[in-house]
Length: 119
Image 1 (cartoon, rainbow, N blue to C red):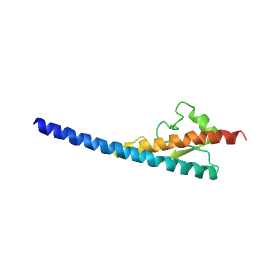
Image 2: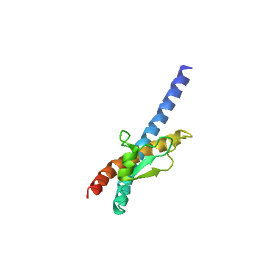
Image 3: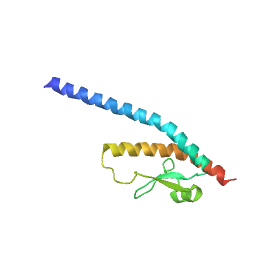
Image 4: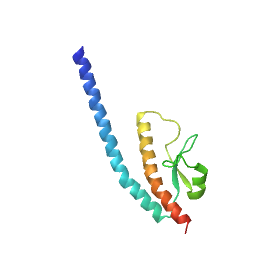
């Protein structure tokens, strides 16, 4: 019985390590995509910040700032697939990745928005 318990624990820990590796891979892939999105936004002079959908919209990276003030200052665009309903672990993981992407994007775009506003 103890051997079976240890076997199950070993198998579960192996599954967990695969998940963390896939998360690291997805996060590594995220950075070039953020840079590409920022370059496209610069070319189009689109300084809008990304926000999550739901009952309480949030601008990733600027949770402490006023949503309406940022909306007025830079403009906003929705991140599709970030509503309140999470159907499973894969949805939760996908939302986490989109949130991290938007946070990286917004940090850079906010600086560009402020520079454009002062010109």
